[in-house]
Length: 158
Ligand SMILES: Nc1ccn([C@@H]2O[C@H](COP(=O)(O)O)[C@@H](O)[C@H]2O)c(=O)n1
Ligand SMILES: C[C@@]1(CO)OP(=O)(O)OP(=O)(O)OC[C@H]1O
View 1 (spheres, protein in one colour):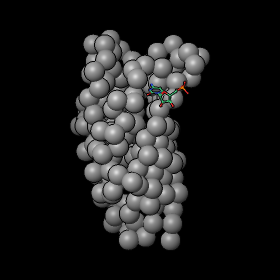
View 2: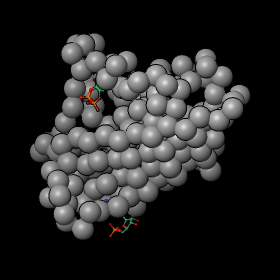
View 3: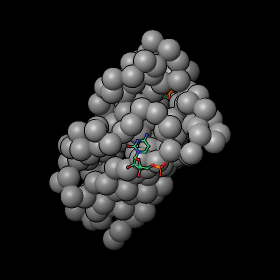
């Protein structure tokens, strides 16, 4: 059996916050805001994994009204969801992700993010693709008000 899922998430920038994307802290003068650590890429991947197994979305599993998820490490949230994926009898086939950001330049960080995502999904780096694009200065990402991320995931039976 194979299952497919997709994810999309957005978080806004705030000066003085750490910028955490794909479990990696990226040097920048501003970071993303959320109830958790606001790791927009890991949230997107979590949603894609939940979608693939028909389990709703990240907010259903980790509500932002629950104080226990305040400043949560999004890697821990993804690990919890990945345990459910494995319980259901699935492992990663492959995942393809896009980070939509005008700044910072993601290319120097792509391989570190790829390695961390592969580790979290208990997979080889060759099963993970991470890419980035600007929106040519258009829209909220173009104005550097926030970052968006997209993911498509394929799960295969263990
Ligand atoms: N935040 C970003 C955005 C893009 N890149 C890299 O630049 C290439 C060109 O981006 P365009 O939006 O002009 O198509 C893109 O393919 C990425 O390799 C990046 O590193 N960081
Ligand atoms: C992760 C959660 C929970 O801390 O909070 P946020 O960081 O606000 O992120 P969001 O992408 O809105 O997803 C769901 C939330 O419940």
